[in-house]
Image (cartoon, rainbow, N blue to C red):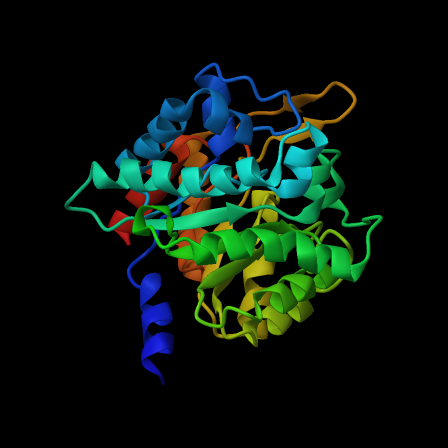
Length: 311
């Protein structure tokens, strides 16, 4: 094993608790998220709220925080008439804000993962939940390559994440496109996290097992997981991930509430204590890292942390 491989493998050593939803907590703080940039708009308007969200999750026990850059891309910024330089600067700013929050906890090791949403997230029409994009494979490669180049090329350590987190991936094709985009940077550390529609298939329809096996072969991959998916599906999906590779498994499902697209509102309830109880099962099933996605808050992550302590 090379020194580079040892360094990558060590990034997630001891990391057990991931943070929860960035956008959900920003909304509770009164941030406006109704524009095409979603939570990325807060990077421009109220960066102190982003730091406050990171701080809240670290206080709740998170060993790893994801940056507020899920929606940031040159394509998305161009749609609102903003140049590529501004989009690139937002990516780096998101990392700096996460680093600033982590620096407030000098006795803690906090891993910073740069959140990179799928192509569909930039379309802000829900396309990441089916993956039926009107674009070419080359378009997908370029979309992801642009952001990788920014995060891999900045010499300032305060703007350099520990790893890249490709999140809410709906299809095998997009994962393969990211793999091609990463080829120029074999030294990077990344995780791939898919959104799934049942206990075996990603949103577009491919087997999660097939997707996981494909990305496990990439030298950059340090973990593989599932996010933005109903928590009830986690046991089956963890089993699929375990069957596909020996990579560490990260799961960060939604709270369990459902989204009503007609009413544009959330339905149902989610008890943080119940989320923590389910997390105990996910760890037992083989997940190394557990966190939360949509509608989870610091209370949910605190319960996950308590689960880890009891284990």
